[in-house]
Image (cartoon, rainbow, N blue to C red; front, side):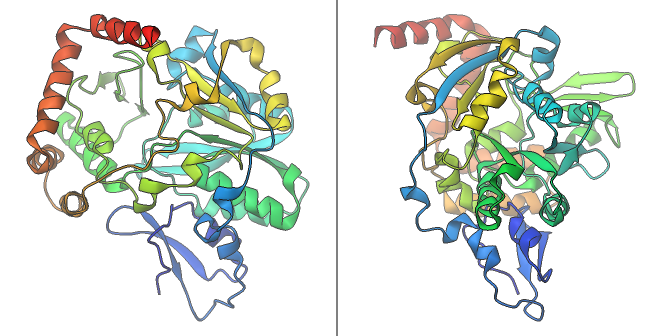
Length: 398
């Protein structure tokens, strides 16, 4: 039997906390992780519901404990900055967590299975596998189970999505072990179907006659920080995705293949459960920055203490919370077309190539959307920074 998954965020924590192992996490045909319950094993204890935010009617009503400290941050170390997706904050926080005695939970890429998985790092060299954003959800089940089963004094720094962090915060409340977890999440746009990545990477391998890659950099800065790009490496061969026409990111930002729960996610639009929230500092203030700048929102005393340990490694500037979230998905409900979503998910399950799926997707869009995309690419090619400067001048006048 499958649980009601209409608002399931795919965090996987329900399986980890089940005392009878009655819940398993499977990847469904649409490319989303979903819980399956074995009624023969279930004892109706209700623990899974207690840590799932879709059953928490008071979530929206909870208040922030302190006024958050909101910063932009750019790593002074150019090598660290170049290897990061934004301002290279996460890696420094992770190193500090290890020094403080925490084990660090992050996401690595499995090059054999072409999936993202949540893992535990206890050594600094293991942290390098967590570098870079991954633009689809990780498989969490086994790692989360390992953490929940650990009844020792070991502490964990959890780097995850807002829905995952919510689940860990509820476990900490229920078991009265708040000191066991340090919680760091991200400004989340939403998680697309994993089938999108599977189809895209299959196409990249086929066109380049490569079966597996040695390294994939998600969100590399090859074309600068603002240009979403993948870097691929195999032996001595290295190449990057196209700057103007990337089918993965086109469908990702098209919003029609997201996890259904992501369109109006409460956790995405709340910071009450996290110690620190991280993300790219999108917005007119850094539109001309090509190296990368992080947004850092510190929401607890423990978060302050952690960031203070690494603050000297960054160029920082303080902003208001409103300025930080202006260009984020925080507080916004994503719009999508239900029929277009169903057709695109179906196409991703089919034998169509990624390029054919992209063409079919464009056919379903209104003509104005295709014109907008064309003009945007045109401006990137021929206007470059001039257009951005005009936009900045407009913001400054306002």
